[in-house]
Amino acid sequence: MTAAIVFAITIVLPNLTLMGLGFFMRRKGQASQAFIDQASGFVFNYCLPALLFFSVVDSEVDYAKQVTLIIAGIIITFILFFGSEAYAKRFINAPADQGVFVQGIFRSNMAIIGLATVANAYGEIGLSIGAVYMGIVTILFNILAVITLSRVSKSVNDTWISRGLMIAKKLATNPLMIALLAAFAYKALALPPITGVIHTTGDLLAAVALPLALICAGASIDLKAMLSPSGLSMQASVGRIVVAPLLAIAVGLGFGLSGVHMGVLFLMVASPTAAASYVMAKAMGGNDTLAANILGFTTVIGMFGMAIGAAILRGFGLM
Image 1 (tube, rainbow, N blue to C red):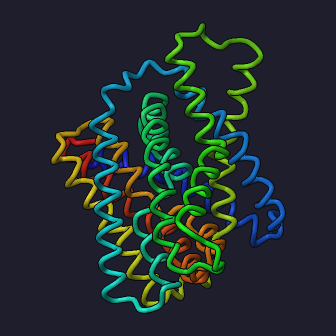
Image 2 (cartoon, rainbow, N blue to C red):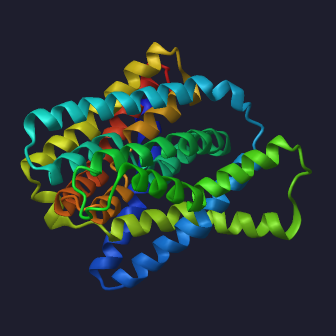
């Protein structure tokens, strides 16, 4: 069990350290909001796409063997979505709160926290598997998020058709989706390996992605909002930090997953609430204060939950 605990600390502590550095820099005035916004945009538009593209192109992973993992992830997402929808309709009255609550539970931070932790745990092979998983499940995340947040529409002209077009536009212009689809196409066409200046440049951009993203995430933490959560934010946080990881373990075991595939499933599902949940909630008229509270609390506390779960799975030889 000692080895399992060391493993869990090893994969989570680097992320917490970088987030702590970002928080320290913000408090010392060394990371302004403008810096955070610009750096986050740089990571999202250039560094993460490079990381995902070259992770897939350079890998020797048999993607056909990931079908079970992806199906398990989709099932978990639907269970969390419909379960939290039922809970929200039964116990939450305000439409502006319902969608934010639901999104806070089912939508995990796979692109930053999830991928970084998977990379710490399994290296390049885990990163390749995680990238494919993230690419598929992210599409589902965006669709379900628009559906649940559409309860509060600020425009009388907002229809299901307009929302559908908005989803399609977001997916078609999403740099992460473009990078993954380009990588899959490159692999499918059996083109020669990418070498030289192009690959070196891509490697440099990829190396920046996760560290800078984690620093920005830490700099964005609002301790006041995190430590003074409302009743709803605490309930949603329990759903993300406790219910989602336990569900991942149950479904993963049900599908017979183990090793790196079980590890990727657990770490991706157990990640804190996605940062994009706040942006989307604010844009679609949801309770952005509630969204910020859920995001802040799960970002910090959820990391410890990931470590505990990883230690237990490792101890039983499942991860």
